[in-house]
Length: 131
Image (cartoon, rainbow, N blue to C red; front, side, top):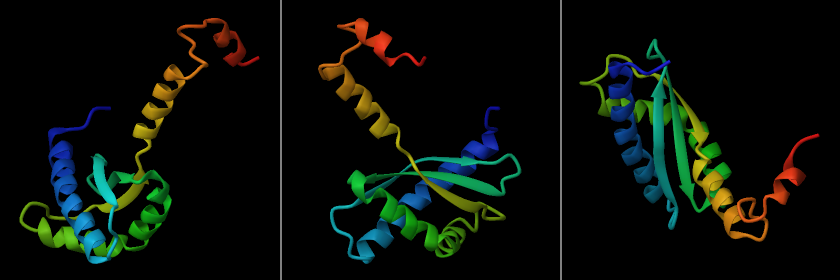
């Protein structure tokens, strides 16, 4: 089901402010060389839950950063509520996830560039089929 205009608007407001909150917390926490970006925010129909998809660079720090963010979710939610108090009546619960779509795209590119290229050698496809 497609998101309503209201859901999209709330998602974009949350996304914009979350970037500022998370990057601010990262720099204040002394994390140098770590980039946290909010790739997507989807809000449920009843506007009670916001699913936040994060991309972390470097990739190997993703799980560690996600755990830290999840443990500080109430503080992040409070900070967001303060920033959006004139735009939102109620702040949705925040659920954080790692967005691994960039890794997925990278794996596909590596497969195409590597020696096991199914486009150049169609016999590989037979090996990959499930029995």
